Figure 1 (cartoon, rainbow, N blue to C red):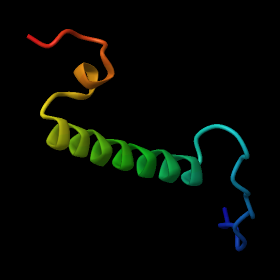
Figure 2: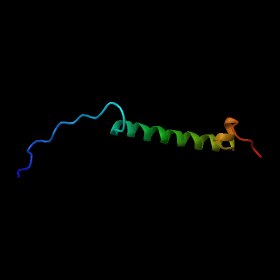
Figure 3: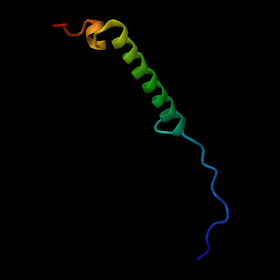
Figure 4: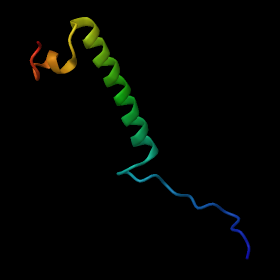
Length: 57
């Protein structure tokens, strides 16, 4: 049995899990974490308390 000599040219799907979507999601998560840390540092309370979703005791 012989091995194929060419690799098929597969294109990334436009929807679903692909490398571009995962990279973009990771970058958005990193930006969100940095924003959450900045909010906590500057206001002295967590993001949920800052948004008024939980009471501050």
